[in-house]
Amino acid sequence: MKVVYTDNNATTKVADEVLKEMLPYFGELYGNPSSMHTFGDQVDKKIKQARQRVANFINAEPDEIVFTSCGTESDNSAIYSAINAYPEKKHIITSKVEHPAINKLYQHLQKTKGYEVTFVPVDKKGCLDLDLLYKSMSDNTAIISLMWANNETGIIFPIEEIAKKANEKGILFHTDAVQAAGKIDIDVKRAGVDMLSLSGHKIHAPKGVGVLYVKKGFKFSPFLIGGHQEKGRRGGTENTVSIIGLGKACELAKKNLPIMNTQVKELRDYLEAQLLEKISSSSVNGDLEKRLPNTLSIGFDAVEGESILLLLDREGICASSGSACTSGSLDPSHVLMAMEVPFKSAHGSIRFSLSHYNTKQEMDIIIATLVPAIQKLREMSPFWKDGKVV
Ligand code: PLP
Image 1: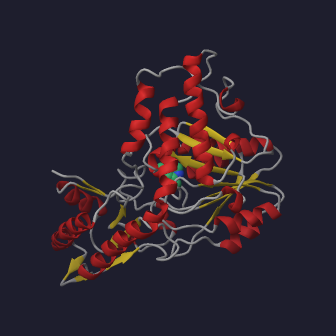
Image 2: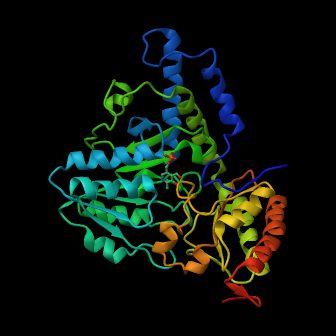
Image 3: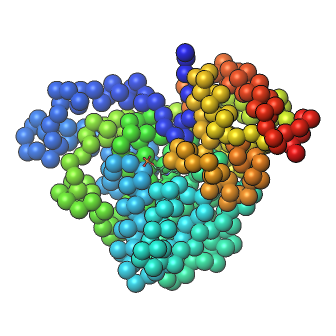
């Protein structure tokens, strides 16, 4: 059965061009980039090229790029470094809809280290309460961390505006741009952020590699203490092959950005319009405009997201009922709950996240599968009677 893959916010296919670039470094070119010999040095040169490519992707300087093992490590490193830099400041700010890589870490710091945490709420459209955010900034705030775009709904936060306010108040600002990267333009200089996280596997590079951008001048303290790698900012022999792949993926992502905002967005909009038209009592979660071009979070009243996913899966369609990290639990996602999405549709919410590999034909397969699937599930649902929610 042919797979229709629309779960690109969970992970992406490694691009053929990326794989091609990586393969020699799995095989004959296995040297350690830290070695003195020429054999290792040729890997070091390739890592330098990757660093330059990542820097170009986000308009940073190459020595502002720290390679990590994943987005989660980048997020954790940023926050720990900030609180180490300002041990006297005991307040930290984030939002209620962050990925667990930030959300759980903040809860951990609150519980175990006594940090006062402001979890800024969002409105029904998933947009941040900016008044509350700005009011909560104080001299005691060590760091503000806010995602650039949400993994479940695709809602984009006004990062440039918020970073400006944080800069004015002299507060460090980190953004988790794991989902924004490759979907909207990212320019760290224009945005004015101090730190920014990326993850390889969301932009057609392999899993297990990430980036933390650290603005020049910030006294960064390493999360992984060890060797001199990454200029002492992250100990451990580099994941050379994946870093090389990530460099190529960043180059491709920059080139493909216009496709994201035309071709991919058109497919997403087509899927959305068709589902809303053909399935009654369905609604899109989140603001329709301030949204990533590839993401559709859509709720179907009176059905269970997990049941929908099973029926889609039988036809080879991959989607998600929330973030991959929270699926497996039957609670509606913390993101949809923070947006106060009514229980009846939060439970039946599905996320489709597209890439430039998707086609119109695939959207038609999804529509042709989902319309009868929802009808079938509603016929069995105790919350659905005579074509209406009860
Ligand atoms: N931040 C966001 C917004 C994400 O969507 C994810 C992954 O889903 C992460 C962080 C974690 O990235 P990684 O899987 O590379 O640890």
